[in-house]
Length: 247
Image (tube, rainbow, N blue to C red):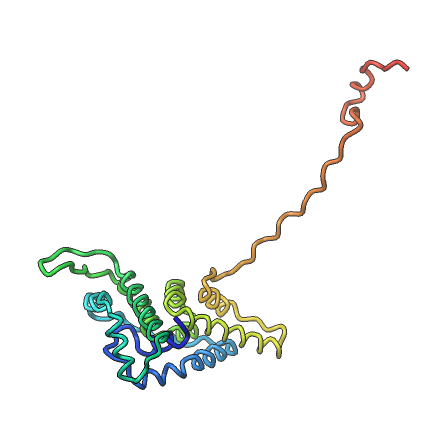
């Protein structure tokens, strides 16, 4: 995997029939798109509008498409048509699209019935369909992550899927955020993200939304001194009645 292969996958999507020159051109500009939009996100305090993307109408068809495995020969042919023989890029793309498709398929509820035509996926519930859609949308078109950042609606499951399936693009995005924060604090040392933006960033990085630091350990007690006075804790009566030693 590499940033280049992540970006090609991000522009092609999870259900490709081919790779076109426009996909490669879009892949070339994708890192800069993430850098600029995340820098703008750091600077703005306004929450963007959430754009709802409904689940695919035929989830069973989507499941069958995701379960179909591409071959290395098939994927290599897509690049060969474009005159590309970069083995590292082709291998990274193949591994990436295989992992991402398996990841989304794994989100589907594991309820099947056996039919003469083979296993059939039972219709998922509304909540299950929404969960599948939220993961599929992020992995099929990763710029969706930027929309979720803006609307501050990024979920831990979406963030985990992005980190797992686009590791190099995630690393690039994370570095872009750090750079934007550094530049902002160079101009204003007291700058802090708002609590909602901070929560989204924590989720993106796999931390709890409210990343509360651990409390400091309690102060250490000084070691107890050796008591050399056996009569210190005795009552006056006990001391007076004790036998006197003879000199």
